[in-house]
Length: 119
Length: 108
Image (cartoon, rainbow over all chains, first blue to last red; front, top):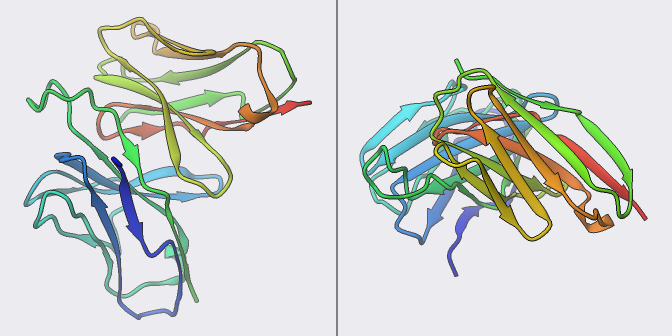
């Protein structure tokens, strides 16, 4: 089944304790992205990756790191989590667009979300 | 910077009614526009994707239109059902700038 898988789905942690949220897709997608969703602020992009070893900042990258060593995986790393990073996090992927040369439509597929609480 | 606005923020309708959700964007140079549905605490489910060269897309009771020149898209839901109750989000381009969504409630 084609899917984007995030882990963990739920996590409660404490300030300063490093954590990683994993994201994996089995659709051979080039493009992957992380979003956070907060009440009243909607979905905001944290980081995105156009392909392996290519990552770039989104709108709210502060406090986060990512890596794209393999096509299928795009982990989100919080080196020193703080309470303002309490949020619902989504990973998404896409084959790409005609403009990017991938031949894809740009349709974005989302994971189920990871609810993170930082105490 | 692209900005996406969805109006209304919330909508409540009786079952069976046809309804229209609106999405507007400030930069008409888009690759595509995608409509999503989100149930409370859940992920986003893709409903329809409209390429910049297209005017509309249809799937079942859903029809989405795109007017790039005016920076607008609409999602038309025919014969609404209680199961359609959810938040509907639109987003533009590959990097996907999202609107804040319309929370739809269909009353039995």
